[in-house]
Structures are given as structure tokens and as C-alpha cells.
Length: 107
Image (cartoon, rainbow, N blue to C red):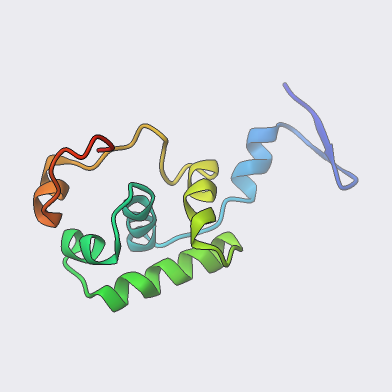
């Protein structure tokens, strides 16, 4: 068992500390973060989820606030850190079809 002293308190493990600090996202916010981290723009994300572009932007803004960042570029990094997406995640065939993407080498 890893023991860590953080800001004067003893924590059982680094993983326990990470889970305690994990921000809460709604399922829709988590899905928007996932799609944005896979390189989908606002229009593609809206098409995949069947919602408006404005709603995508609202979900992204709420997720960024929950993560404590004001930079969209950090959104993916923080999402990976907290386990909302992974570096190996890819768009599904259905998601590619909905947004009109071909095999672009990334997904």
C-alpha cells in the first residue's frame, strides 16, 4: 500500500486521492468531453449526439468549470487524468457515420 503525505494529511494511496478529487460530470458532459478529446469539433459533436451546437458549448463550458480550467486545450489532458477518456479511445463506426468522418488516421 502506497502512503502519501499531502498538505499535512495522510492518504492511503495516490489512486484514492485521485478518485476523491475526481470532478463530477453529468453523463452528457462526459460524452461531450470524450468526443472533443477525440478531435470532434462542435458541429461533429452536435451531429453525433443529436443536440444543438450551443448545447455542446454549454456542456463543454460546464465540464471545463468542473475541471477547474479555462483553457480548452487542457480539457483533454484533464479528462484523461481523471479517467473520463483514454488515450486509446476511438470513435465508433456509428459515431463516424453520424459526423461524416472517414478513416482520417486518428480514429
